[in-house]
Amino acid sequence: MAKILGALAVVATLVAAGLSSYRNHSIGPGDTLQTARIQRGDVVTTISSTGTVEPEEVIDVGAQVAGQIISFGKDKKGKPIDYGSVVEAGTVLAKIDDSLYAADVAQAKASLVQAQANVQHAQADLLQLQAKLVEADRDWKRAQELGPSDALAQSSYDAYKAAYETAKANVAVGEATIAQNKGAVTQAEAALNRAQRNLSYCTIISPVEGVIIDRRVNIGQTVVSSLNAPSLFLIAKDLRRMQVWVSVNEADIGSIHSGQPVTFTVDARPGESFQGKVGKIRLNATMTQNVVTYTVEVVTDNSNGKLLPYLTANVRFEVARSAGVLTAPAAALRWTPAPQQKAPGSFTRSPEGNSNEDSSKPEARSTPERAGGKQGTLWTKTDTGLQPMRVRTGLSDGIVTEVEGEGLREGTEVVIGGSRGPGAGGESGKNPFTPQLMRGGQGSRGSR
Image 1: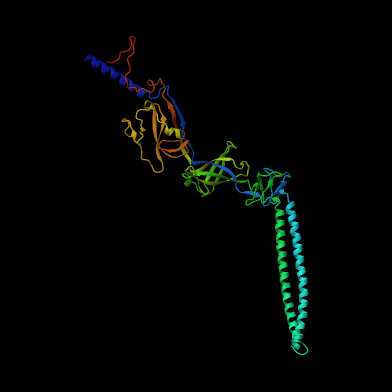
Image 2 (image 1 turned 90 degrees about the horizontal axis):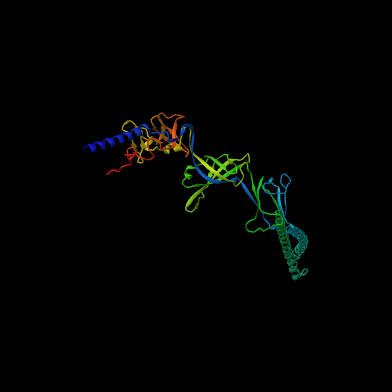
């Protein structure tokens, strides 16, 4: 009986020592805690995606005739047209060999002259036919006055009548010949206009003022015009206004709307941020590997010329913003101390959302969650250990989170990480209530 009482006394002593270590050394000298301060600032929630910087309006200049490129025009600086050349509307970009088209123009001009001559010839013939008609008309009138009689034979009477009718018909034929030749003149004029237009197409001119983005031909290269006009130059009309074509997943497209603020960066300008706004959402969605994406046009100002066409942009669409609110690091809301580090009376939320409360502080219960926010816990360092602070969270950008709660103010230090030192409150990771083997000069004895 005495042995049993002695063993119980040893166990009670060990339990008391463990409890004393738990309560009085909850934060030992070997513990490492990382803290951060509550700050006031703006929290912005965004949707991230990637896109391509595109000129707002691009003109593809092609060739409507076939031929060999023989020369390039001059830009504003007097240099040959090349990549990046600034051109005005009407600037000559290139010239195609026009020898064949010049010959077509000469041939069309000759055909027109011949057609016009035919008209004049037909008009002269008509005058002769009209004169013959007048003569036949007079003979026929005299024959009618005499009539078939002894002075005018029946055959002569019929001959005058036939001559009159023939002259009348010949005049009609002459008038038709003139109309036909005039039609030939019109046709020849159209052929000449066509040939002259084809000849003019041999000189490629800029339809707008802009910058040459791409030159796709060289001197000596032959362009062949078919159903699709070959592309020779790509001109950006105005690089002072650019667009970013962004691919947005179907899960996020519902949060995008016209006029929405956008921030984006490009690798070519590290450390710089550019502003824009949503212009339009294209409805022709695409599907790639069962993923539906929409193209969103973001309009931005490029008056400083820092954005170049076809740069890759990392885009963030602003979905919501809270300005001038208290913010805590998101890591502080995720961090939970080890059981040995909690001060007496502290509690944490269990995974099911319930509170594990200390009986010494029955009033420490979670408050109901208010609409528009979620409940969270921040840990602050005190003289007796770590104390929880219940807060209501709002917007979060993944780095900081909007928080508000009773007693929470700017500058409050909260724990964002830490580890338990080996020399504080017993060995790290071991239960302070577990009895330890007795150690002495004669060694240890195992229990039976």
